Length: 220
Image 1 (cartoon, helix red, strand yellow):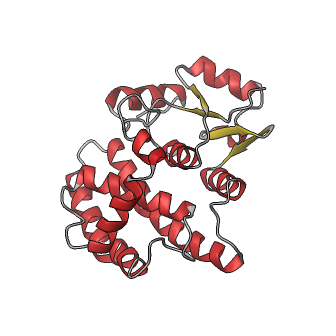
Image 2 (cartoon, rainbow, N blue to C red):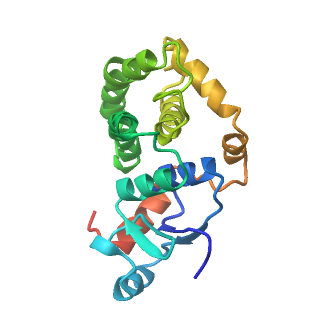
């Protein structure tokens, strides 16, 4: 059994990317098993490696964890990125859920043949519903919750970077968020993850989407 966590997913961002981010910021090295064929997927199923018959799955501390939120919560708790008490954890969960909603909207763009209408809707929701929440939370604060770095800060950084890839200048009216992002980018582990050759992945493209559909035997 590898002492490093092992991540089972495709060689693309998707839902695993947030897990990669969290492990990286916790300075935990990890190995990856990329799904590359239907036969490989069926073999993993046969071996009982894929609970609920899906990925992401992460093997860590002798267990195989499925479901993104369960994986992220385990890592956050293990590496002291989940607040100091129950109240902090509730706040972290609240912010995290909102960020996951917005992040998932952006991820799904890769699966759309014509994302133009969705782009407009996502930008509107980001500016009017989501970003103001975090702009306010960061007023006079370095971190989102309890004056301490947490997994919610990692998720916020990833989300802002994804937004800027699709909407150049989207943070120009959110000074607290821009300052937050600048601080986070100075963290050595974050800086390394953004450099070429890191384990950071590209979004799903037509080739990786076609592979995913083939692996899961999706008709369209």
